Length: 455
Ligand SMILES: *[C@@H]1O[C@H](CO)[C@@H](O)[C@H](O)[C@H]1NC(C)=O
Ligand SMILES: *[C@@H]1O[C@H](CO)[C@@H](O)[C@H](O)[C@H]1NC(C)=O
Ligand SMILES: *[C@@H]1O[C@H](CO)[C@@H](O)[C@H](O)[C@H]1NC(C)=O
Ligand SMILES: *[C@@H]1O[C@H](CO)[C@@H](O)[C@H](O)[C@H]1NC(C)=O
Ligand SMILES: *[C@@H]1O[C@H](CO)[C@@H](O)[C@H](O)[C@H]1NC(C)=O
Ligand SMILES: *[C@@H]1O[C@H](CO)[C@@H](O)[C@H](O)[C@H]1NC(C)=O
Ligand SMILES: *[C@@H]1O[C@H](CO)[C@@H](O)[C@H](O)[C@H]1NC(C)=O
Ligand SMILES: *[C@@H]1O[C@H](CO)[C@@H](O)[C@H](O)[C@H]1NC(C)=O
Ligand SMILES: *[C@@H]1O[C@H](CO)[C@@H](O)[C@H](O)[C@H]1NC(C)=O
Ligand SMILES: *[C@@H]1O[C@H](CO)[C@@H](O)[C@H](O)[C@H]1NC(C)=O
Ligand SMILES: *[C@@H]1O[C@H](CO)[C@@H](O)[C@H](O)[C@H]1NC(C)=O
Ligand SMILES: *[C@@H]1O[C@H](CO)[C@@H](O)[C@H](O)[C@H]1NC(C)=O
Image 1 (cartoon, rainbow, N blue to C red):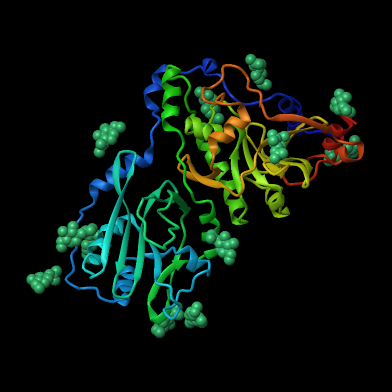
Image 2: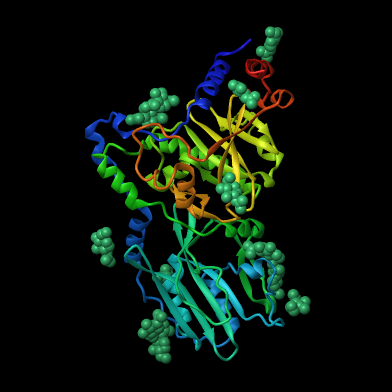
């Protein structure tokens, strides 16, 4: 017996697997002109910063206390809820106690507390550098660098901004000799984290991230890149304001994507926005309006069966389909027929390239891209943080052809990096596709029906 949903599943598989999906033609969008003025492509963070910067009363909290020794400085940091984000100390590759010769520390402080702290630290007899940096055309605080000559203490205190649902930390050009910057070296972002108080050496009280492993996992992929607002605006305007985001749909996508991300991140696995999802983020600062699928890449060598298990029978994002095997052409499809998410495993091919599968009935194809070499970056999509390939334009050029992706297409797009590989053998084919129902049960009948069709 085949239920209505399963019939639909089968249909989706047959229709959509064979068509090369993706770019949408804006000429086909029917839009109500009266809505046009409601939509703007805007960097919300920039608007937020302008407001925040203007709100700050720079010098209203002075103290007369002179800060002479590290203990007092640490106390001030503690009292302002600055927290240790020193990657080397947290990763225990550098000692945190006074008897070792480490005199370098990196703290973070929320922007709202920044100037207040600065005023206190300004009273120390250490050299203080308050470094600003540019964001778009705004000058914003980046970090305080404090160097105490009498005891060689060097403290970097990075300004941490709230952005969307995450934290954002700008870069600056400040350098100290023999000092490696882990923050403010690049623009970075992190997920929010809880802090807790610990006793440091000599009874300094210090705040530290509670979940250090998660902090370090986040840090690894923390370099932040912006979507291309100029390009998004250009395409929007040059289409006569017709090529634009469907905000209702974006909200739905955002919730689902975030849900999946939380699960993958809770296992500390690397993933990235791929295919049309990456293109939508970068080119449109949103989503390609008419796509029905979302693509994520995962590294096959980070395989964990927990990922599949988490989605079997999942109320929010149920596993619909599994293609291939974990060591060959693996792909999990989650969601429903209106909107699904494909998780593609990427396999190493040679020194420079990796591939993911593109399964077309019984034919195995491979989609090649350059290896990411652990270079994933953070990005903002619908106010949330996701991981993307750091060299995003290179990646898009490889997927869609050199600069072919820059303008929305007026024809269906064909991947330029998909190549025929081989057909599944009879014995492989029998288990190369698996359908699941909403409760996570394997759908034997439906699967058999599909397998037999091509046996
Ligand atoms: C599968 O097919 C068999 C025979 O056609 C039928 O008896 C059985 O109920 C079906 N099972 C499901 C889960 O649809
Ligand atoms: C700082 O010290 C000066 C004189 O030493 C005093 O007049 C002033 O009130 C003090 N300010 C504060 C905020 O304590
Ligand atoms: C402090 O650091 C030194 C040198 O790295 C180490 O030998 C010592 O055990 C550390 N002490 C504490 C309390 O961590
Ligand atoms: C100055 O100090 C007061 C009281 O300690 C505090 O409420 C206020 O937020 C501080 N101002 C700034 C800019 O941090
Ligand atoms: C430190 O305080 C002095 C006034 O006492 C002020 O002129 C100077 O701008 C302050 N420096 C910083 C970096 O805030
Ligand atoms: C920044 O640019 C915007 C226009 O993009 C302009 O309105 C604003 O005045 C500029 N701000 C500064 C500080 O130059
Ligand atoms: C920190 O040290 C103080 C004083 O030595 C002690 O009372 C307190 O329990 C310690 N706290 C933690 C979390 O170890
Ligand atoms: C933490 O240290 C290990 C080696 O001890 C290193 O492989 C890893 O990259 C470090 N993590 C970070 C975030 O620096
Ligand atoms: C926007 O998306 C919603 C939800 O997917 C859909 O119902 C609606 O038809 C879409 N609007 C347009 C103009 O495409
Ligand atoms: C790796 O394979 C890709 C895709 O076939 C190819 O373009 C590239 O030249 C190969 N690299 C090396 C080092 O062989
Ligand atoms: C692969 O399968 C397709 C259809 O599924 C078939 O047309 C083709 O001949 C097969 N190729 C080989 C090499 O078996
Ligand atoms: C593009 O693909 C869709 C879905 O597969 C199909 O319905 C449509 O006819 C195609 N359009 C063109 C111009 O090829």
